[in-house]
Image 1: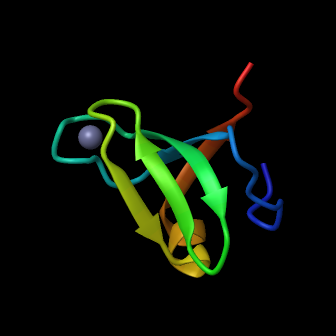
Image 2: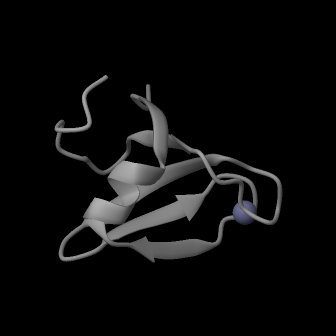
Length: 64
Ligand SMILES: [Zn+2]
């Protein structure tokens, strides 16, 4: 994967940091000045700065 790939809604990201619920997978909901992610474990939504997110992402997989 390349960290320069644009983030797209629907893509599943694995982050280096686990959410308190124990899940490390998030789905991209929307892209803007901030990237909105939804935790796949508990459904909580969170906003990330794009640069911060690039540092946190371990891998990405396309949502099929
Ligand atoms: Zn969670």
